Every structure is written in C-alpha cells, then in structure tokens.
Length: 543
Image (cartoon, rainbow, N blue to C red; front, side, top):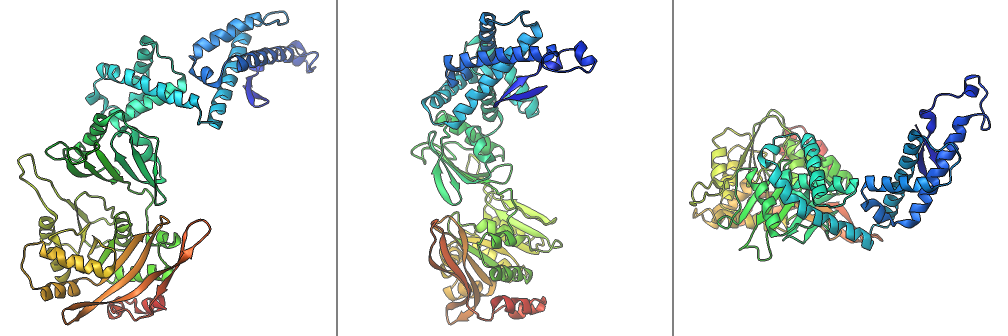
C-alpha cells in the first residue's frame, strides 16, 4: 500500500501489521495506535537515509550504482541511526530501505530529465556505447540469430535480457536497470530491426530519414530538414542494416549492385547507394509511409488545396479522366495519387506498376506489379515498360503508373488512348506545361521513331488533366495548379488553367500566405461530367 510524503512515495506498514488491541475495540488515535507510531519511526528513518545520500552522491552516481549495492549501503547506514527501541523488524527494515532507495532513484532520474544536456548525460551515452560494443560480440557468440528471428520479440527480449545481465556481470560493467533495458532494446533492434533507425521509424512526426554515412542522420519534420543525434558504429554497421532492408524483398546490395530501390514492410520507400558510387559511405534514403490515411478531405483541411479544388478533383476522378500528377522530389505526388485512387469504384480492376511498390490502394481488386533488377550476370531485368505492356493483357479497367520516367511513357499513352480511362501517373516537373514537354521527351526514349506532331497528338488525346504539386519554402505541400489539356492547335498542345495558387506574403510565424484562385473558365470536361451527372456540381465549384 503506497501513500504520499511530499513528492516521494513511502510504504505504509499498515499493510504488514495486525490491528492493535485499541484498533480492534475501535479506540484509534496517534497516542494509542502502535501501528501509527511505528509508521512514524519508519518514515523518519527513510527520510534520514534520503537526506544523507542525496548530498553524498550525484544524481548520475545514484543511477549508475547497481541497485543491490545501493540497497546494501542504505542498510549499513540504517544500523548507524539512533532509532527508538525496539529496533526495526525485518519487514520494517525492508520497507525503510525500499522507500528510501526508490525515492533517491526517482529524484535522480527527474533531476537528469529536467536538465538532459549535461556532461553527465553525455557520459551516459558514451558509457552505453562502450557497453554495447563489449556486449554485442559476446551476445552474438551465445545466440543463434537465425533461430532468434523466429521467436516472438517479447520472449526473445526476456532471454536476451538474462544473457546481457550475465555478460555485464562477467565483464564487471555497471549499468542501472534503465540503462540495461535501453541496451537490450538497442541490441534487439540491431538483431531484428533497423538498428538506430527504429526510433525514427516509430516517430510519426518524421516524414523522411536520410542517412549520410555512419555519423550523419537527417530527418524531415513538417517539411524542414534537421540533423539528429542518431549515429551508427561505422560504415559496416550501415551496410548491415542496408543488407537487411534489401534482402527482405529478395534483392541485394554490393559492389556489383551499388544502387537499389526497395521498400520496408509498412510500405515505406527506400533508396540505397553505396561506395564506390557514394564517396562518403553508404547512403540510405527512406520516405516513410504515413500511417494516417491521407484523403482529399484531409488535404483540404490541412490547407493543401481549397474546397473547390478538392471538389473538382473528386469529379475528375469519378468522371474517369486520365490525370497526370506533376511535381518535384518530395512534393507529395504519391500522397496525392493515393488520395485520388480512393475515389475509384470498388468494382473496377486496377493494375499498379512501380519500381518499388508503395501505393496503398483500398479497393479489393488490385494487381500490384514491381520491376526487377538484373541478376549477377546482368540478365533477367524487367522494366516498367515491359510491365505496362503486360498490364494491357490483364484486362485492367485502370492502369496506375507510380512514376513515368522513360520509354514506358509511350505505352502508358497508348493505354490511356485505348479504353483505359481514369488512369493515373506521376512525373517530375516544375510546371504543367513542362510536364507535357517531359512526357514528349520520354516517348522519344522508347526508341520508336514518331513525328513530333504525332507524339503531341497522342498526348493531347490521352492526358485530360495535369495537377501540379509543390513543397514550398515553409515546408507545406500545396497544389499550385490544376490544368486541363484541351486539344491541339497546329503542332501545339493547348491547355487551360482551372485553378492556381497565388502567393501574397508570409505571416509572423514564417508560414506562406496566399490564395487558391479559380480562373472561372468552363471546364473542357463538362460534357463528360454531365454524362456522370456531375456537371452542376462542377460548374458550382468553378464559381
């Protein structure tokens, strides 16, 4: 039974004693109740021990001291105190030691947490790293990692904790219980997970994790990059984690294949590049998959677009327009693609094509295709272009191409032109007009010789809308333009803007301020929206 004394917890002896004669007859009071008197003695003794050791040791020394050693010191000091007769019983002694020990450790921990940036805190990190370097190889000698990976993490944690305790005792390494627990967690992350990156993967405020060699790890939070205090032991440690990532999806990373796209179990996208291509050590870039499902409603509430823009995009998806999402690296193209895909009817068959599968579609009838790199002999590569060709033989209602980057652009345009309305894709470009130009250049990369006019005619006939997204300097991702492709004039693809974002300034917090403006033009796809019964809502959204 625990009570409160100031800010510290104390153990009440009432839990261990039989009621006195006075209590049994209902005559209770401080003068007549021996239990209360003995409780007072216990509290006074514990307070004396706390006061003495609070000044004798620093907070860090108390936390570093093994619990058993501290308990022995307190017990020896208790014997020197001038306590009333009779002396404390065994149970009372245990209560005094436990109460004073717990109070001292709680005070010490709170003291360090209140001022974590101290030389002592740095010393703790150094000591933990030294302990890990000593314990890790000895633990690997005593455990079968292959079999350990098949054991539930909770059970493995208990077994590893026991082994770590034995090793620490053998090596005379002194860690308190909190540090031992942190050490076991770190060792388990190295054995089963992604080592130092596990804490960043669990942090939902982190969008990107960027490892530049062993000693430099950046993250992106709210659109801004910041350096973390996370580090690896050395480049070999980074390579070990990189190998674990790629082997999980049947790929490899070595000098013959120094560049790999991969994904984590939760769908997060990973790019790894190692020496000799990466001069300063292995580099890992992780684009985390958001656990929160981002919809057009969420993007509207976050200010990524206006309500009218969200309405037009919903109608465009329902009306089965072929939509190209354009933007720079990290601008939110895949996020918007996922949001638009949620509007696809559940009765449709969808085929997705990606280098590393990361799209998370909610429909029941989805076929996910992924490219394959060449083997050691340089054979067996399957490109996006081959997958697009094959997808057209799979009776898809819609084809979704994760990123258009080369000759597959021609096959995608042909798919959009041959009855696969409502297809989606992304492309790297800074403006809608530039996206169409890049698409034309990528068709040329297919190796098929076509006149420029024929290629532009294909684009004008296939792509109905370009949505431009941008990550702006305040870190916020915004849809900066929605542009329709309306046809050809001579040899030029003609377009019209439906919406654009106009920057007007910035507020006191450094956030950009602007307005999402409708051009007021009648959308070219209004007749198509009318076919789906959505023309009135479309015209109202355009204002």
